[in-house]
Image 1 (cartoon, rainbow over the protein chains, first blue to last red):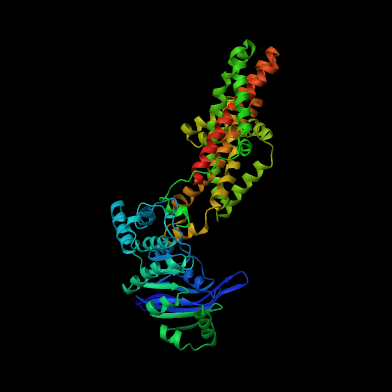
Image 2: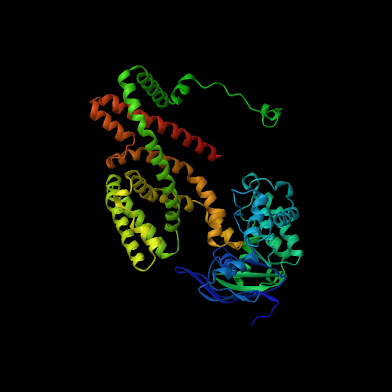
Length: 248
Length: 288
């Protein structure tokens, strides 16, 4: 069995898309409350790894445990686990036909079975936390990209998840909006929720991460404290990647 | 200030110079004006010419049949279409194949032939099937249900009901394709976001995907409704007394072909023009 402190355990996971190997035998353990940032070139498998953690992609081989529970094909169990794993997407994926408030209350009501008032209460708290309480009755299309992403974070947090996954949360944003989203994420990191973040924001990784994982060609090349990975990378590929990304 | 516009208050409307006359004339919907003229002229003719008046009074008796048939068949077709559309994109092999089989069969047969086949072959076959089931149930000792099923008489199924069945089966397949396209037009991220929150497939469909998809396909469904209104004219082959059948009867009795068929044509045109204006309004409302 797994250590109860290991909230995410990925063991020997292989994932292929047709003839493309997205993950070639990846194993990693993430402790409760840690903030882990995954970096790497595009196509390195970082997003696939993240999406395997809540079974948006199903691994071909290997096992994944979330808080001690093995992810299987059992739909009902997967849905229960997903409710405990919040996910924030690159393109926000807010529900455009619902108001900001309804975006945040819907899953609370139909998945968490909270009543309307409770769901609303929690939604408003989370909106305040991400600093856009005044937009509760707007529709997503009326918000800027940065505001939409903050709503998406509030939507995920309202479920009271054990883990938050971020899939390149600032990659689709205009430069002037990146900071407002990163600030929210930094606050979150300080609060002790387990976070796994795929990003190209090296500043965020240095400031917020407890651990950094560098991936390339479907493998984890390096995994350690940010100072170690950034300042003393052991592999040439990590060095090359970092020099390329820091030049920008 | 170099730029005058900057001095304008926020949201000010700047008056544009009037477009040249030629452009405005080009943009005018002449076709619509022509339709209005046609309808005005025929209304005038019908209200002043006794022979047209007579044919109109005779033919309008079929209006309720045409409208009721359209509404009933369309309501059933929508439900059938939604279920079939969901089947077409389902990951369940049986559901998916049944839905695709249905759509492909219907698309491959002319509507007139389908109306004959469903009304005169499928319905009698189903009633005799139900009769057989009834007598079997009676034999099993379930006389109450069995008796009711055995009592269904093929001749007792009115032609208008058969027409409704035929049209809804046909249009169910058409609207299934509309629903399928509508659902598939919704960004994949919507389903992912809903599933990532722990919703199951059907919850995500019901609360996230369908509300958006249906909104997108409303204009297409409206056009389907208009097509169906026109296609109800085909049920006259079953001797259902819709406006087409009544007009045929009138023309046969009086030999007043121009009166009968112009009245008929204008009746359809009036209904479809009004409906397509409504669809255009719907489209405009949902474009924003």
